[in-house]
Image: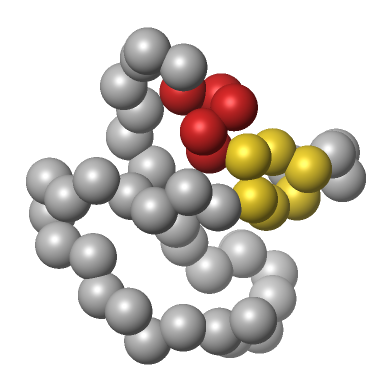
Length: 49
């Protein structure tokens, strides 16, 4: 799934589920609870992208 939605700095991230480095599914809402988090996305180092 791809999206062109842009989220500005300081915006609340929408809930999403991704696979962790170990292959487990991680859902943002399950991780956060009452905590705050910083999300950083970058192109995988060896992806060729």
